[in-house]
Length: 320
Length: 66
Image (cartoon, rainbow over all chains, first blue to last red; front, side, top):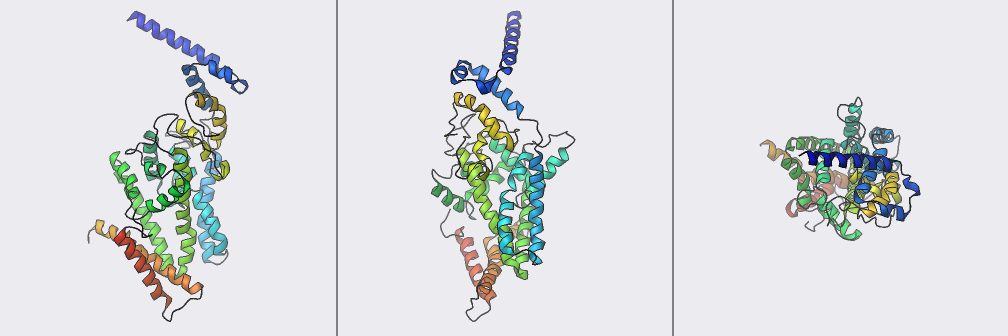
């Protein structure tokens, strides 16, 4: 018993010393040979140390982005209906607004803006709820199903995004499957409700119900009062384009071929044809799955610093 | 009609076809100057109703079943 305690204390002491020594390392100037000398445990310590530098930072840019983007989209409706802005100018802006709606809410889903008990918690929840209004999918539904995705990434039964992550091995298969996946009889429609039922959150389906009733009421009312084209170009079509975009960059590209589970395996970096901004930062989505509390804007820097460790941990960085 | 059935009707492809696709098709026909001698809303209802019915029966808006 005494020996076991002594061994444990000695392990903690050596780990603490190791952590202190590793903390002083200038990782930027380390060569491949230097990295290769580190043990698996030392790589773990260093990985956590590097990641912690990028956490606990309030992403004010995402706050402004989420609230501002929603405000711009909402303002397009009266501007178009009062003939102040042409629908042909408003349509691409609305499409961009709907495409930009998800990610600020994603920061809030992970409590990156403020955790429970933080004085700015209200802002976290406000951004979460408001930013996804243009996308027309409720925050709580996205949050709960997204937590399941993180907990079971690439698991065929438990990951609610698995069917999207597994939408084929090339772009054409993806496009075909993403269109078929949103048809009325598609099983893809069942993934989120099933995840909510499985986790005892079926009451959140009421949010989805309310959201869909509002969405359809707006479309139907606008359409039958002579504004169908406006409704189609400000909301319906942008939403369809966004579902394709979000499925492509946020689910399919980082997770495909969706064959592996586990840390360093279930989410991989990739080179996007549209660059990092065009893919809304998703080239470095692997960092987000390792450390979900690193804000989106900091994942590229975190990836660059973590890269030597990730490679040694067995991650395929796919050319990045 | 109970609540579940009402929700099923509101969210049905046929309701979307008649509630949105029909007036949308009618307005697109009007804007593009197309006319076949009947009011475009009837053409719209024919298009939206047919597409909605197809989606309702086949479970797909694009004919190909998922």
